[in-house]
Length: 110
Length: 114
Image (cartoon, rainbow over all chains, first blue to last red; front, side, top):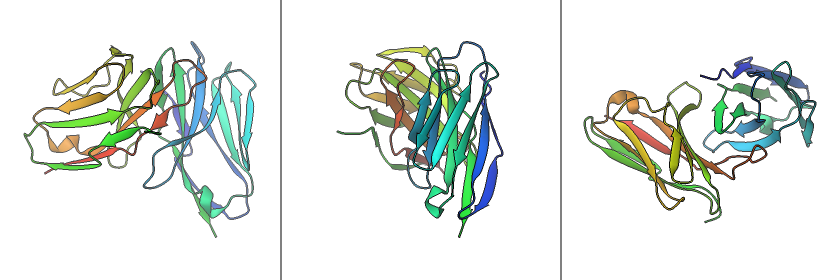
């Protein structure tokens, strides 16, 4: 069983504020680390796929970093907006199996 | 189709009945995953296919669950003698093989066992 852990489980952030949360994963046999956004009543959609230690990816106000040696990734949301409210899932790809964390649910308050 | 298609979108069944859930992956995607989300829980891995082969069935909760994939395309997840604890949203995802490939998810099948 591959332990992919995300923290915090949920957070509330005021509109306009920035926030970040973490994903930890096994540091051995690393293939890739994925981030997905899962909005209510929709399917998860990929934000980032990161494969190299030190990778930093950015999409608009959302960015992610990766440390494969210590087994963690951060997701950052800058200037949070109500449309950022969602559950953010990270997933660890080991060989072939994509194992998901339980997610961090972000609620942006207007 | 352009995306991953799952059917039915909703299924209500009586306890003890068998159900079959279908997933049509994106054309050309060799990897196919089944997950489920029970109420208040995260995504639980069920099974993975590479082509028609399932190298990892370890996530299937019991021998009432089975899955197959034919022609490297459509997959069906069958649950026999359904129980109330099988109620969940069943999600299918597909991707190209390789570490840089993101997974694309279907809309899911919401299964309710009454």
